[in-house]
Image (cartoon, rainbow, N blue to C red; front, side, top):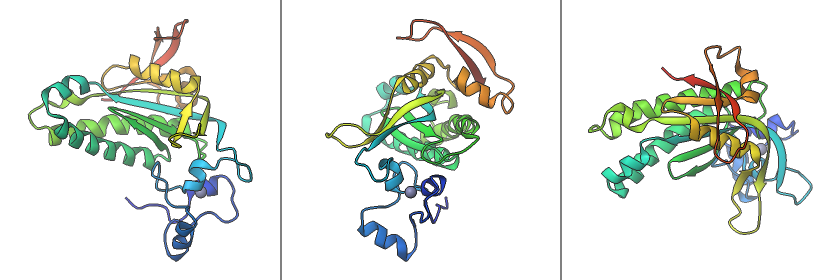
Length: 244
Ligand SMILES: [Zn+2]
């Protein structure tokens, strides 16, 4: 995969001098502590964390699309194979998932065990971010489906199926707190995306109404569904997309 020579986040923010990510000028930036982000190699670590230039505030509230994915067969599988082999399996999956997210201009905020949290439309701003997020979701389901029989030939392809939840709304992103200064994303939008993921079946992408209104033209085959979600009092209207 070819990475961007100049930070796409800086460009999206309208910076006059976007941070160079390759070539001699990038060495200077690295000396200054600014390098390619591990969450998306097409953006710089400045865009990743210093959301409000000129202030010390390292977090901000933005409107973005959150994608949660997790592996359905994980618990069963982790009982069948040893943790060393499992680590190898997860590492290959993480790698594939990250490539797919980056190809759609998202950032991989976190891998949490068998789950992935990705964000679209921040810091790389895109008009079609919701469509990109859903396209990435399809790509993730397909990538894991293709990878499963290769890394675990003794299992059938459905043993490692992925369920995905996507929601668009406000969230707070940045370095929150002093300890373990990782970039994190919090807020009800993140929670709802996570709950939708919990309700998604294997090989299914469950999107909220706010995401769906931006993608309905591109993905007309969605099935409307009312979901009772853990921790949310009222049933939530969602749209299910099946990856064939
Ligand atoms: Zn940047």
